[in-house]
Image (cartoon, rainbow, N blue to C red):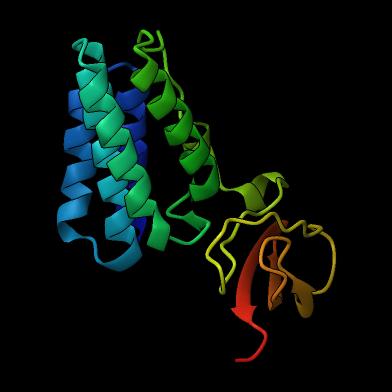
Length: 182
């Protein structure tokens, strides 16, 4: 997995320099060998870079389509993976998709906040998916506490109960949701 983390970061450096085609190539290299959720995440990043490339070439409709496809790849990805805060990336993609669909100009120097570090390392709320309805939900977990804990909480969207699993290690907090009936 460290090779994939470095692939994500290599693409990020190129993306934030405005080198969208080079970012695409860097992320695609990782995508070729990745499997499962990592493959979907890298496919989303590849399509993100392609969308910005199209948008910069004054093809906002094509960019909007690619942003939508990138978001679709994130549906099966956990809330944090390979150092990417996936829920933040989903919000960024949605915002850019809307801007491109309106025909707005490409942002001068787009930044990917989602790749600046996972939420658990920065103390931000976690945004995992409800295991019943699939909606992203906010779960706040303190960085201080026992190493592992579980408790039951209801989904604010579908009202079904999940088991919240919280793990803490070295100041990092990870949250996972499970079905209460499992």
